[in-house]
Every structure is written in structure tokens, then in C-alpha cells.
Length: 486
Length: 121
Image 1 (tube, rainbow over the protein chains, first blue to last red):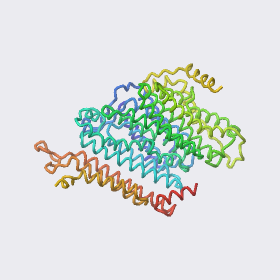
Image 2: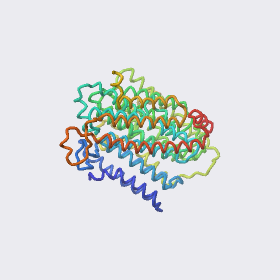
Image 3: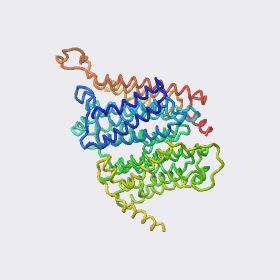
């Protein structure tokens, strides 16, 4: 069973190479089959007892000099999210014309690199994997090679290279101080250091690199360009927003594990979280391009995740981690919807989209579920995680901040509700939803609901955490709202 | 004499690194941005190689290295070979993208390219 960890990294990469080099007729079928295998495997790993991290050595030499893969609760959880989303995306775009062997090769190897980041025990391996995945992402962004995406891809590549250069220099300082680069020995060695001030330089360099990767407030200007780029296929945007930004958050958690004992990080993360959450939605309100609205909201939601991770109550970090899963699904769903809407209406301007309810009841229902999830309504995934993110934050200051963030999110999604009403304009192109696309929409909508209604059971399965927010309390929340606004 | 004690691999590499950062912040030419990233990468390589450098150490090669008191640390070299390979491929990719970008927009200035992108929108 331990050997299957290698499959998570090598299976997608080799499958991508195989598809690209030999160009078999059934290339998409192979991709779907591999995705199914990986989703199944990650579900099996999630169900195992991972309260102690499992180390799988790759060499005969033990760890400080050898190499190993490590899986713990968080890693298994992140892998489940990433593989599930990759599976849904491959199914969604099964009949699209851009699913060439080249696209599949880059897309599948990106999945391998992301899985590798979640399994690494060594910071240098993480650097290499993140750098290589940056390359694949920038190629995916400019895959259609039209004029806008060239600039977006170039800008994305440059900013991320600079960020990772800071990260690597920080690693150099860490190596100079400790002579090891794996998490296991670093977290043992850090508290023994006599001069704690020597950690300031490596920590700030590494934190700069990670903040850029996870798009915290001053360093997020690359994200809307990369995620909201007009020309990238919508499944690429969904993967970028759903999974790839979360690798930055994941690295932040790993750094927190290592440095947290020496440098108090909770408040720092919390402050960055509030600033990012507010900054994200303020910029989102100003946009009129449907994909840009969603991209700026990713910034805002990453801020919310950070608020959870930095919270003082023990339930706050669990809520934050749960929000990673919730956000991956509803944001993926919203990006897929945006892609189809752009196809139906032939424009990206949200103000020109009208009458979706008249055109398709199914798409409208899907969109309502996705919007209710992102705004955090009870019974939906976002509501469940946001309840625990806000849990235990007492005082008027926090109340004002949370109300501000929620109100801001709702304000910018009112534009989405306006798509539903009105009269459907004369169609520019005949668009028909295929069965595989309907399947993906149905599955993702279902998961959004399950994550909210059966949130306790899901959290117990994927995180091994007991969260208590039963359905009748969620129902009571609805009544509270109604009473408040009636 | 105080000045000379500062001239070692580490200090020079940190200075070089921030020269690269300056180049990225201050110059609007895309090609110069790529060069600046190259400078930053070179600085990091110098940094890694000089942190554990010891002129008296012997290379960790051969069967009887246990006899020597000081043996050079092979890990930074191994890491840097990887980093050099990644750096080269990244530079090659950026240059390829730059050529494509230049064909599309006919400019190598970030601001002009950005303006042209907005016009297409």
C-alpha cells in the first residue's frame, strides 16, 4: 500500500508522456481511467489512520541524507481535492477540440507535480516541483496562443519565478543554519537554535515566496491575470483557482508547522487573511468581466481560509482547511459555468448576459447552488466552513469585519443573479450541453450540497475532526436571517 | 581591513541577488527582466556553494574519506546542479515566450505591451 504513493506522482506524468509520444486513439479514455484510479486511491488513503505521518523511504539511506515521501492527514486531504477536481475537469472537457495529446500531456503532468508537492518531505523538492509546475501552468495559460494570453502567461511566469527565487535564497539560509532541509529534522532542530534572531532572514524570504504563491494582499496582482485570462480554457481556470492556489496555502501550513514553535505566526496570518479577504472583494465589485469577478473572488476566499488558519479557537483552523475543499468545488463549478455562459452568449461582459432561466433551468439551478455556496448560506458547503472560520471570534471588531466580508461577497454576486432573469437574447451560436458536462455539473452541485448538509460526516472522514453544526442549527440560521430582514 | 572581511561569497551573492531585484523593479524591458532573473539565479547558486565552503576540506570521493578530518559537504553541490538545470530551462522558456510575445505585440516594453493588451479587450 505504501508503494502506491509513488503512483500519485508518476502515473499522471508517464501517462501524459505516453499520450503525447504515441498518440493512441483512446487518449482521453486513458486519461479518464487514470483519473478514476487516482481518485479511488486518494479516497483509500484518506480513510486510513493518518494521525501519525507515514514516511515512505525512496533510498536505502535514512532521512537527513536520503529521500522520502511523507503523507499525513493534510496531505491526503489535499490530494483527494486535487485528484477529484482533475477527474471532473477531464470528464468535463472530454469532447472539446483543445483536448489534444499535447494539452493532455501538460495537464496530466501538472497533476503529478501538484501531488508531488503534497507528498514531499523536503523543502528543496517542493521548490523544484513548484518551479516545474509554474512552467506547465504558464504554458496552459497561453495554450490557445491568442494575443491576450501571451501577456498573461509571460507576466505569470515572471512574477512567480521572482517569488520562487526568494524562496530558494531562504532555503540557503536555512541550510546554512541547520544543514538539513527536510521537515522532520527541521522542526526538531529549530527550537534548539540558541540565537532565534538568525531565523528572521530565512523566514522572511520563505514567507515572501509563499505569500506570492498563495496571492496574499500586496502580492496578488498576477492572480486575476492568470486565472481570469480570457483565452485559457475554463477547466484550466478551474484547476488554477481550485487546486493550484491552495498549494501556496498548503506550503504556508507546512511552514507554520516548522516555524510555528519559534516564531508566533497566528496573528500575522490572521491579519493577512482579513486584509486579503477585504481587498479581494473590493476589487471584485469593480469588475464587469465574468471570469475576472471570479478570479478576484479567489483572492478574497484565500483570505477567508487564512482567517480560519490564524484563528485562536482550535476549531478555526479546521474550518479553514475545510474551506479549502469547499472553495475548490464551488469555484471550480463557477468557472465551468462561466465558460459555458461565455459560449452561449458570445461575450464575457456579465451585464450582457440575460435570461438564463428561460434558456436552461438546469444551468440556472446549478448556478444558484454555486452562488449560495460561495456566499455562505446554510445547507451549502461555504456556509458550513464559514461558520467554523468565524467560530469564537468575539467582539464588535470581528463582527464588523465578518459582516463586511460577507456583505461584499453578496454584493458582487448580485450581478450573477441578474443573469437569471430577463429575456433570452437571440442566440449567436447553437449551443447544446453535452451529457458529460451535465454529469460534471450534477456531481459538483451534489457535492456542494453534501458538504453543507452532511458536513459533520465529511469532516470526520477527510479530516478526522469532529465538527458539530447539525442541520437543525443550520435551519435555525435561515430563520434568523428571515427574521432579521423581514 | 574591515572591508576585506566582507568580501566573501555570501555577501557578494546577497548583493548580486538584490541587484537582480533592482533590475526587475526599475527596468521596463522584458528582456532585461529575464536577465535580472538570471542574475538572481546565479546569485543563489553562488550563495549555496559558498555557505559551507572550506578551502581545507577534501572532496567526498574515494573509499578512505573517513581518514580525513574535513570533508566537503556534497549536498549544496547536488542541489545546485538541479537548480542550474531548472534555471536553464526556465530561461529558455521565458525567451521563447518573449519571442512569441514580440511577434504579437511588436514591443519589448512591459507598459506598451500592457497597453496593447488592453486595446484588444
